[in-house]
Amino acid sequence: MNHLHIIKVALVSMTLLFSTTSADAQDYRKALDTQRFSQSVNTGQNQTLLILDSSWGENKPEIGDEIAAYDSQGNMVSSVVYLGEHTGLALWGDDQYTQAKEGLSKEETFHLKWWKKSKNELVSLEVSEFERGDDTYNKDEITVVSELKSDQILVQELELFQNIPNPVAGQTEINFYLPQKNNVYLGVFNNLGQEIMVLANKSFDAGSHKVEMVSPNLEAGVYFYKLISGNEKHSKQMTVVK
Image 1: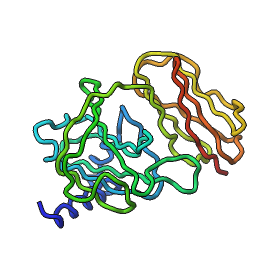
Image 2: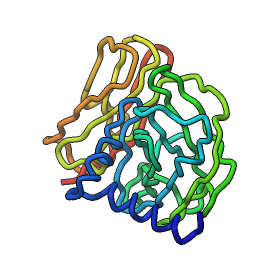
Image 3: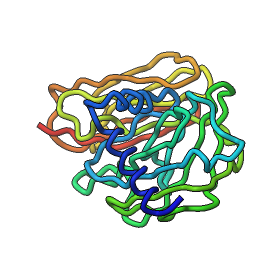
């Protein structure tokens, strides 16, 4: 496949991904309806990553499996459901106007994970060959994967995702993944470390969960939300605007 054709495929995939009028775009909206991974924050700047369906070889995902991209610090920056065809991901870049790191920095390395739905198994992916580009982020670039392989099975651990949307103007969603049934505390703190809101403090089943936060009375500024389950703790920043 020549470079020109690949670029055309990537552009069509990207157009359909964000289209709201095309019938084909309905499939791409299905591709965004992830279960294991949260959706990433739309920061307004991204790089297009296209995984050619032939790149999987004989080890193709099943329809309904999910692929996600992560930055070098373990923050998820894109996710999509596999629909049995070329897979397009928008790798979101970091928003320079918020203190939270919501996406990839320039030339930062990204890596891929594959969730096998039927087995509830998480696998790291290694790109063996790029038809175009490489494994680093550059705004508005198109990267095309032509060969990859599953690397190793990963232990699924407690995972806290960036709230969506961020910045917050009244309401946002916080998603997390729980590897086994356990009690979960989820609270919001100001920059002095004072707890100002408890969003959850109860038992959750294993799996992915979503908690809504309504913040009509919060002053504009930077806040932190903290997730605690057993001996594990995770926290992330959010920005509230008025």
